[in-house]
Amino acid sequence: MDKFRRGMLVALAALPLVQGAQAQGVGLSGAYVAYGLNPDGSAYQGDVTIIHAGQSVAMTWRIGNDTYRGEGTLEGRVLSVNWGDGQPVIYVVMPNGALHGTWADGTALEKLVPD
Image 1 (tube, rainbow, N blue to C red):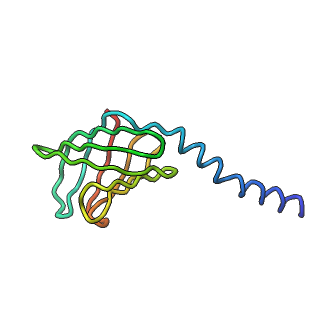
Image 2 (tube, rainbow, N blue to C red):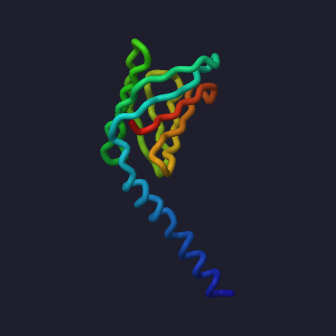
Image 3 (spheres, rainbow, N blue to C red):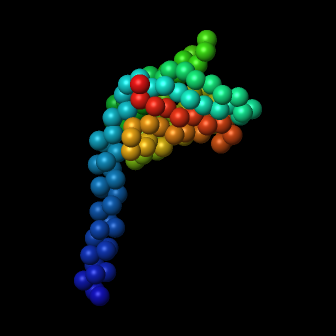
């Protein structure tokens, strides 16, 4: 039992290192199609460009005639982007490369699909 516990402790201690390595391997730079729901429930669609370097991310959204810009940080699979609103957009990077997110304090949704 002691060997099992010791093995589990070593595995748990190494987990952050493995997760960090996986996060560094994620490359988000590129073009995406955005599908979203505004806080009032209305749908929108547009284009998003992401530039990813290290843990830093710069994003440009083109939704209709409007352009929005933001900067954020990728930690593991979670991307937090400040874009000029009081609350950031929070995305989770999915295994297929899509990003699923929420904004407006959780009252709006957005999905980014690689283009």
